[in-house]
Length: 277
Length: 292
Image 1 (cartoon, rainbow over the protein chains, first blue to last red):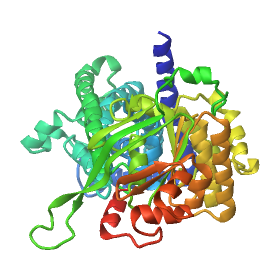
Image 2 (cartoon, chains in turn cyan, brown):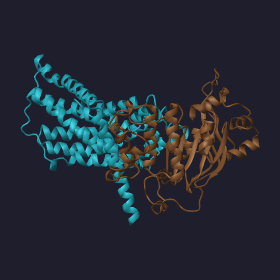
Image 3 (cartoon, chains in turn blue, green):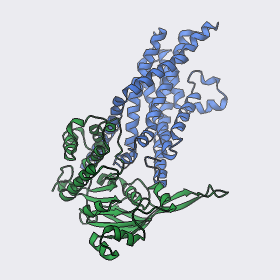
């Protein structure tokens, strides 16, 4: 029993260590983060203004509704970008700094390592997504009288479990291919959102893309969040989105850990677990 | 006796079984795949380049062993295998009775290393780098609060520079922090991979003095890989000569000199390997070095 307690204590301290390190990095790179946030705000505005542009061009749309719909898509895109970026940095940043060998030879279990990165990514991503939503919404004086933000947050947190699982799979890419791995992570993020109806309804996609959409957690996350913010649905009416997310999460997390483990073994066999790759 | 983190040997004995060698390596082999250099239709074929060719040696607890070898001799491959960063292609390696490849988690708790590159998050301070690294070894904030300033003080790191980013520190300073990081986790096996290479004479002397202090006063076994002959001679109980992946000898320095002839370690090395220490490395050595 004492051994189990000590082991659990070690894992929790290690998990906190991963989060602690990322907090230090945010603190030290705060101006870089601010600059990146401002870029994201500008990028989001270019997308969200599309609704007003259509109206100005003579189109007849519910500007408030479409603007909110686009805003949600852009915020989820930015959120997912942070999740994938942080998880991909599990290897990429460590390699860049040269610390990869020290981290991977520490008695830190890989699931704890990856969950630590995921936990930080979720917390950091949620704070950033909340700020982004508030800042951009302010520009448009949006009216969201029925919005249920708590239900939207619930869906996003549940979806994040699946995002972390997929992120683990992309995190291994820089380990296998030091030159191209990070970019492949961005490709995965883009593909996930394209099929998930990030700025449009999934129904407009070709049939084969719609099939892929059914196994993408982003599809259910976007649907659920839009229902909560635009339709005012409460947590009790989110089950249609929650259960697929739980199922995808239950598959993607073990699969993500397995893929990362295989990638790590490959890197160890071929001498790629080092600073220069 | 206290270990490097101030724990008693009784506490330590919980994780280090008595009566087993600190390191036991038997017929250890490692090869890497290398793309053919020649052009033509076979250019994309890969061939195996041996980095370690059946290494066998034992280190006793508390012993300091230096492995001498040129670039590409396999020193770093050996350190990386014992650090659990590489998988082997044959043979076995045990650290305090734990199989390095099957029970790597247990080995990681016992081992730490200092390599030629200090390797830190450059924007983070020394205290921050040490703090998160200690967490990975299960040390809580309460345990490191006093311990980090103390250990930084012991390696001669100025107290007023603890919050400066690592990138603002000299290489000598960074290497001291690397030593502090390794010692903070109380390793019973310390792997030093060219820890003084590239340091100015003063920093080199300070780092060597601290290694000597660890050797003399703590319960650590030290494997020092270096191509600094004087460093090996002054710090090690035994010296091994590693040449192109083969361990030619592992003996006390006087025995090496007697066996291979010559009054100096350099002459003994020359006699054992058939080439001088400064001699240009061959193409094969360069290929091995790629993976070192």
